[in-house]
Image (cartoon, rainbow, N blue to C red; front, side, top):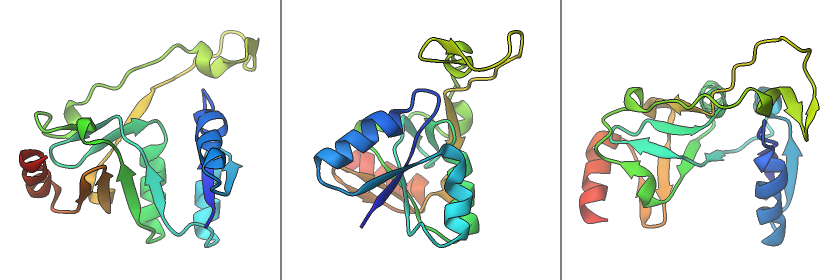
Length: 164
């Protein structure tokens, strides 16, 4: 087993945190750039995708780090299971769907600068949404510390929350 971890721009959490955690637990890890997912899936290098979540709506829509939706669509295209691993506290049963989740727009300097050094020309506009929403139809299952939730998510999340 090997984990291919995205670098996770703009803060490089994958390169700095995910890789550190996996290495600490003696799990082989290779860092790949955020744009490599399609190539790796197309060439049979990915067996499953596991992402985290910042918020999970009652219907199973998932808000997570920007780029998650892109990976989910690619996984669907290549028939690769797409799992969300998150603590139970991430499930917001009062939030009906991902359409209700506000998307934070972050400081443009997070994209235009690396370690205090400008990497884009002065005056170029920057978009920097911190999160995106992945529709529940793209999610194979939600894995929590108390169990696995499978589709149909609306029904199963409701039952899960009642028993959690």
